Image 1 (cartoon, rainbow, N blue to C red):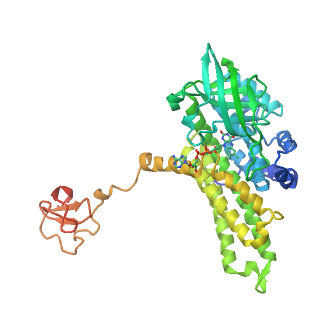
Image 2 (cartoon, protein in one colour):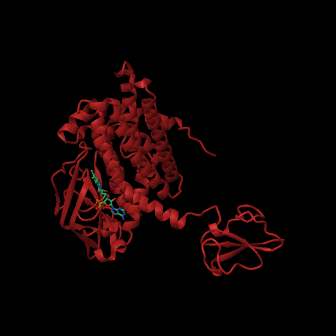
Image 3 (cartoon, protein in one colour):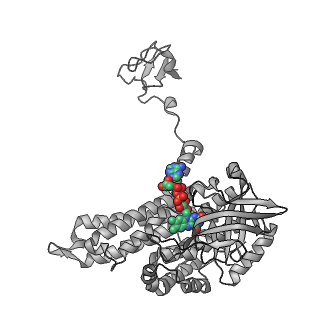
Length: 447
Ligand SMILES: Cc1cc2nc3c(=O)[nH]c(=O)nc-3n(C[C@H](O)[C@H](O)[C@H](O)COP(=O)(O)OP(=O)(O)OC[C@H]3O[C@@H](n4cnc5c(N)ncnc54)[C@H](O)[C@@H]3O)c2cc1C
């Protein structure tokens, strides 16, 4: 049964997130974007309002919300500021591997701490030399007794400069690729951890992005989230749960752009009438609306799968890919209907355009989503239709060249050009493409 109704609890969460976005996020977004700085107090307010860390299970004292609730909250916050939404949601990305880990003691300790106190946790697979190729991680984790010692660096780490805890993926040997990677929970204040300068970015400037360096950082065995060999799969499982929420970021940003465009075209005049009266403009709004709706449906489907024990990997990629690309198109078209005003820093479109651009890059670029989806479609997807060479006759009882089959009993299909030949045996050569007899497949025996 399909049901797109939200529960009363989900509607309440969305209402709360919407109010938070309008009252706490929107009023500071532009100022902090200009300053290129994270308004940490907004993150603290989100924590106090119960809008962060919502996916900590009840078992660990958390709210036990699902990915769908995360998507609902994120759409609202991202509608006000995608950068701040990234900062707020980053705890769920940072905690993701821990939530999926079997290290119960570590979970109890850190999830308990993150739930009770305002603590940030970041997530780090990317490095200066490898991002898309997670199996190419070079940050070293050398075994020292039961402990590990980390050496290397991470790059592009959201909240890395302000996080208390870090989920770090590192390898015992880069040559082992997938099989060498483990995941470790590091504290910012441990000896040997140093933080780079905030990376100056095009957009999402209300989020902090840095490099992190590890020099002989000792990780006690208690802080192993996943032992070497299990880290890569854990990172992928984490992405499968967070990518639907990236879809929600994109929906939120696109929704705002569409709403600003609707407002603008109802007021702006050209050629003696309001922009809204031009059908070309109306159709732009229609396209924006269908893209926002489609992106949300795909996002909710992926989130629903994750919450219902179905492997969401493929739906998450579909949602992330579609929503990120659609948001880019929606924001760009919204800016277009503003004309020159859209290009200024006085209206919100230019910030949305800069912020939205990131959705196609982080948590797996659009190209990497296509790698995942083409891999699935070409290898694992189970087709319904028979193979082309096994299709039934396209025109029953009559060959494609219009000649009746006569009294001959069998039909043969040329696998190269599709020609159907009727006869007791295949022809020596296809009369269309000249392929030899062995190109023909017997497709039926007439009764
Ligand atoms: C603002 C920001 C925040 C980020 N936050 C985090 C974070 O918190 N934690 C973290 O670990 N990472 C984070 N990232 C890193 C992000 O996930 C990577 O930038 C992204 O995965 C791409 O990796 P890359 O930059 O190394 O590009 P590359 O992997 O070098 O790719 C370069 C280009 O080649 C394409 N490409 C690569 N491989 C293929 C392929 N097989 N087929 C087709 N095309 C391909 C890519 O799509 C891309 O267009 C963040 C990045 C940014 C910009």
